[in-house]
Image 1 (cartoon, rainbow, N blue to C red):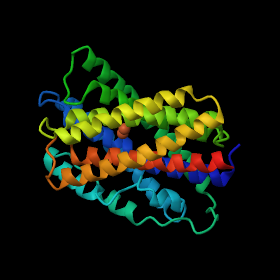
Image 2 (image 1 turned 90 degrees about the vertical axis):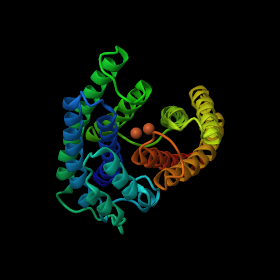
Image 3 (image 1 turned 90 degrees about the horizontal axis):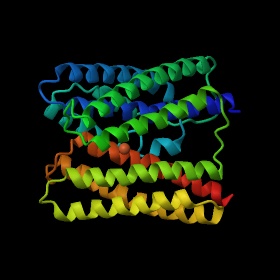
Image 4 (image 1 turned 180 degrees about the vertical axis):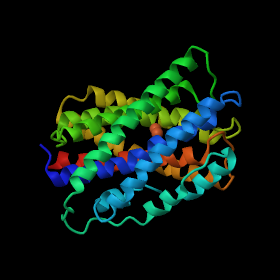
Length: 310
Ligand SMILES: [Fe+2]
Ligand SMILES: [Fe+2]
């Protein structure tokens, strides 16, 4: 059973990360339709705005409450996020609430364990809204994915990328449900395995997307992205097969090293795309988005390592 403090802090931290992630998925979807699908574009943008509203409710709650570890992980915003948003807004014409990004960069960490009275109810309602909205986002994405693979709708996103964002939203949805039930969130060996199976698979797909969205002339970068895709696919399988603590410790160590390298590659990639030094069909915000997802995973991996050493 989660304590009240754990429930509040973990809820705010996960919402701060994932509300932005899901709203960006909707920006990528909106930018990927053909001119014919104005209805789908408008629906994606409207849904994105609802996620922005929830994010704007979360930011004031996070100030002075979330851990330094989350804040300095680079998963909330990066030094590139604002520039990436402005460039993406410029390219696509999709309005992006950059004031949220500015507000997220000045969030302060918790100084002590004092949780303001009445916050629990606030957080409970926020989680309920996030659950409802995420459930809706998943069902619309599932419908879109089905229409795309059945060749009824065209988008410039890979079907696998659509499937990927459905998986990420599903992962967030499950965490929210556990939080609302006040489930014990203690990380056990079984959970370390599950998380690494999930995130190594996600990282492998990032490698595949980057490889496929780079300009064919970017041969060196394509090669590096391809190697990351393979490496994380191996780590995904290794995590799946790890049934003992010793085997899992090896996977955690390798996943940490590889995620750290991949994050560096993504960071250079984001910078290169924003500075117009890399040729690709990757929106600047998508580059920054996958960078943040690596940072989130890296923070989890560091947490797993500490637990394995206990
Ligand atoms: Fe994502
Ligand atoms: Fe992702």
